[in-house]
Amino acid sequence: MNRLSKYLLATLLAAAAANIARADVTEGIRLLESGNPADSVKQFQAAFEAGNADGAFYIGRLFEMGLGTDRDLRRATELYAAAVSKGSAKAQNRLGLMYLSGETVLQDYARASELICASADAGDANGQFNCGLLYSEGKGVVQDWVRALAYWQKAAAQNNVAALNYIGQAYRDGSGVSADPAKAVEYFQKTGAAGNPMGMFELARAYADGSGVEADPIKAHAYANMAGVRGQPEAIALRDTIAAQLSAEDLTKAQAFARSWKAVPIEQTKP
Figure 1 (tube, rainbow, N blue to C red):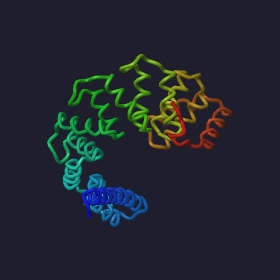
Figure 2: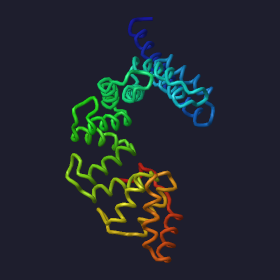
Figure 3: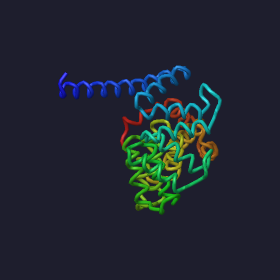
Figure 4: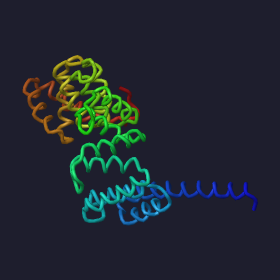
């Protein structure tokens, strides 16, 4: 076999190994979602051994969440560190969050920001959201709302719900941007339409106050009602406050609106 043939063969084998690794992670996720964590671990392990760093990340998540095994944060940390050493952006974000909270490692904001923002710069949407959060709070970095919003915008472009909500809140409050209630509502409508409880609650507040949108107590009640049943803690009190101001007819309309409401996948909406 000549040198060129050997090079082509090596290239094909490397590509095949990469495809197998990706397939193992995909299959592992499918098995996990189908309720088979034991077999999912085998797929993630095979992926990691084939060169996919995310394989160790997913096993770490199983230990962190206690899925199919006892919850073991120390073991999760070790697996995240192994995945980080091989370049996993997902693991950089998770390990960074552990340094942020001081779980199984010393609390270290500088190390947390280093890992999380490296994940963000590698294109991970959760890393982008969390890096933006660090800049908004000045943890491990100099507080910088412009950079915070820039990272959130990157995450929002990947339909990260938390980033969309935080951008909406920034426009609502004028944090890092000029206050623009109408612009804020656009972001909350996107997440609220997908059924996100925070987005729904913010819509309820906007419709109740007429902030950025025409006041509509019927919609305000409906969105507060739906946010409450999804676990938004302040929504129930808002719903009941609005209900006390509605006529019996309007209350019936509000409840009918909530009953007939259908979620729209977030990728099908635009802020």
